Amino acid sequence: MDVQFYDIYDFYFVPFWKTWWFFALSLTIIFILLSFVIYKLIFLFKKTKPLSIWIDAEMRLNKIDPRLLMEKEEFKKFYFELGKILKQYLSKLFELDLENKTDAEIRRYLEEKKFDFNLTNDLVEILHGSRFIKFANETALPSKAREDWELALTIIKRTIPVENNEHPK
Image: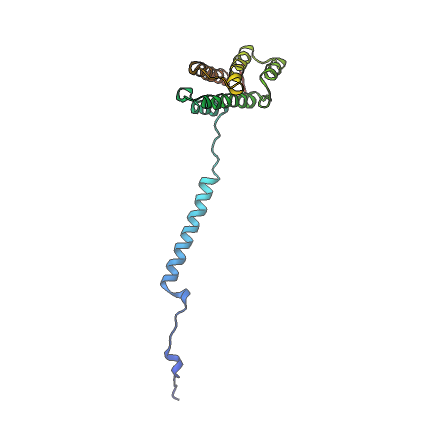
């Protein structure tokens, strides 16, 4: 018995999924996807320790250094930011509600809470002095702005907790 092949058997086709370029491309895509997943697992889900409240406040105060200011509007923005930083810092550190209060309300609120007298006076001095620059459109003295900025830094340094969950009162 003789086996005869028809003409159709002369034609040979390799499916694309069995070619070397498809295999190389598949390995590359798998490698990229695995690298991306590993990156996400390591870097994005890694918990970073947040900055402490006082370090954050000091960094923000250092960004608004009054030595760099020249214009009236810059001093106005400086005092708005200075008051905002101090109010947020003291609100977070001592769990007080200072952010939406006026100077008089802050003084009264801190006296009711029996807050440290010296810290209260220093805070109110900064806020009271800045009121004329922010709202009465007066010109700020660079030396006064520098003095208020340094006083804000000392307020932060005096209120850094000595040990965990301990606040100087």
